[in-house]
Amino acid sequence: MSFTAVELIEIKRDGGALSAEAIEWLIRAYTDGTVTDYQMAAMAMAILLNGMTVDELAAWTEAMLYSGDVMDFSDIPAPKVDKHSTGGVGDKISIPLVPLVAACGIAVPMISGRGLAYTGGTLDKLESIPGFTTRLEPNRFRSILIEHGMVLAGASETMVPADRKLYELRDATGTVPSIPLIASSIMSKKLAEGLDGLLLDVKTGSGASIKDLEDSRALARTMVGIGTRHGVETVALITSMDQPLGHEVGNANEVRESLDVLRGVGPEDVTELTLAFGEEMLGLAGIDGGRDRLREAIDSGAALQKLIEVTIAHGGDPAVIENPDLLPSCANEIVVEADRDGYVTRCDALTIGIAATRLGAGRERKEDSIDPGVGITLQAKVGDRVTAGMPLARVRYSDQGRWEAQRDLLASAWSIEDDVPPAQKLIIERIGESDGI
Picture 1 (cartoon, rainbow, N blue to C red):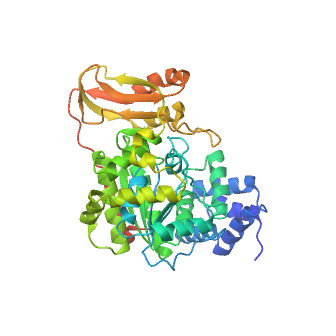
Picture 2: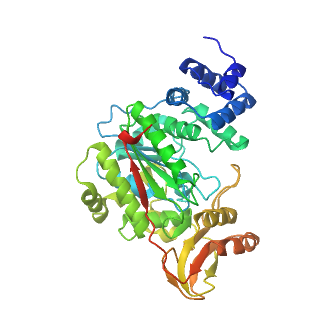
Picture 3: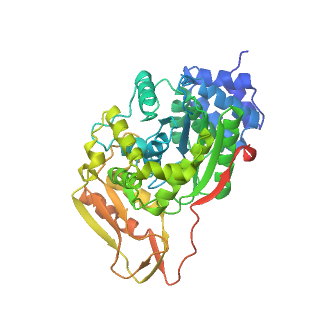
């Protein structure tokens, strides 16, 4: 069938639904350049304003998925399960989680991303390990997965190229918040990994890309529905992102904290999420043992050894895994102090994430470089008792001018009051196959 971009835009503009054939043509034509950026921008805005039906979303995801290469790991006998996070401040969970579940018999072909807006992404954190490369050719990706049961890499140029174009366009045209477009972007990349199961960590709150709980639920249900329709057992956990995860925000310092988790001495919240996610992934893989098996992999050192082996396979220096003091760290350090006695009632993830990014730990633009040694160590979080002059955070930075510009912003991240605040739930909700859209 023959279509034009204008007629399809008009259908969505007027609240209509596109056929699967029309969507397949549109994505293919956009990928090869027949449909222009300005035409796809108009379509993205129409989708943002009018949404998509379940059938449209399924067809859109399918077209995105098959716009490039799709991996096939059916010859690998181990169950293939991955995890995806919608991102947050201090969200380093993938780094300890992947070697932990791989040590329990799951194959994890993890494809991660880089950070934009709130500190670095998983790839940026891993690349603070000297020599660690996340750019892998498909054959190398496969060989590492077969040998080690895990791989930590970025998407190849030929995987879901339509998403790469559309993601950049959405970022420049104010159409990022569309739940159908977010869901199809995430799921097309994950479905291209040839998975048996998928765990989704959908963040909600101040430091999340989606701050409203109802919107987070809608996104989780939508993605679970997409995974189910494509034959991949999918579970989503909605988790809190009102304050940063763990004590470290940055890149090299988050790797250091991840190593603490694998040594059994990590912060309580990061350890709990790592174990909770690992338990879900074992369940998706049909592997018995749950937390006992995960804790055994930590206590025996098997999970840490797995990360050492994979670091070598990725070209990284294993010495920094064995001695994290070798990781990059900026020489300048300053302390942010409490201005009164009381209890911390707010440790705002968004404010801390923005300050860290502006200090050099993240990117405000795609072309920005990251300083892996920049980091913020939180020393007081919600519920902690502090007195005037006590450290709230220690900040390591390279550029004095950047620090002076962020000093007041970072100090504003904490609220201290007389009364103990209510406890915050780390995992808010679980959404399984029966809850998906």
